[in-house]
Image (cartoon, rainbow, N blue to C red; front, top):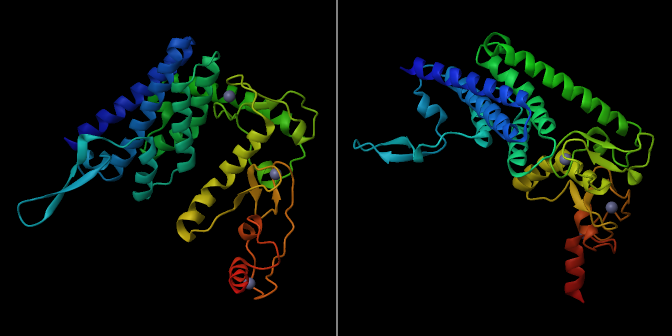
Length: 325
Ligand SMILES: [Zn+2]
Ligand SMILES: [Zn+2]
Ligand SMILES: [Zn+2]
């Protein structure tokens, strides 16, 4: 029974991915949405199948249930039942993979979720382009999941596999062209230099500058080849900083309660001042301040200096000094 459920799910995963590729091939706005829906539904089913195959003796329903609730088992104990019958989504799939010790790029997975939602909520006049990117970006994770399920995509996807390879190749070419237009930019921040820009409207990687010869970041005239938006260079940099360091900021806040590594810039107000770089990724401002407290010789953290404790005292000594007044 368990085995049959598992292979049903795999069959449906493959069917759904194939349908997505077929919808993509039709290339009309109405089919674009169903292409992305089908393809991503297939990838999600595939992810569930990977989990189920990892624990062949478990009940599949218990493996893919989203939430569990303890209920009394009438023997003085509890059993955990699937609450609401919901199954995991893209957001929780990464967590479950982690718990099952199956390697997966969770950041990539969450970005796929965003990408899909963006396409759901946005009309695009270039549907084929948007779908191509959605499929190309999901490509590495999809192939990894097939392998984790002990299958090879070429064996099960048939013609759809060839189409997927073509989609990826085409997307790679477009991406290379976009990136080459930004290759000569003299970035203020090494973090931004290492992180690629993305469209702040649709999340696409297919962003380029109109003048490929321009080396100045503040003179970049950006255009998204996916949705046609023209994001400001400063917004695109704030977004890149957030993608590069936002995860670290979250962990820092959660584990130590400390701010950083990104701060509001005292000069341009953008949330792009990076503490390790001691400079703003947007305007290049470097904030000069006393690093050592004149009274207690303790270190003065950047956030204290930024809020105005710049009399050479740390926030504690400032508090003490004000109390004595
Ligand atoms: Zn865009
Ligand atoms: Zn700034
Ligand atoms: Zn002090």
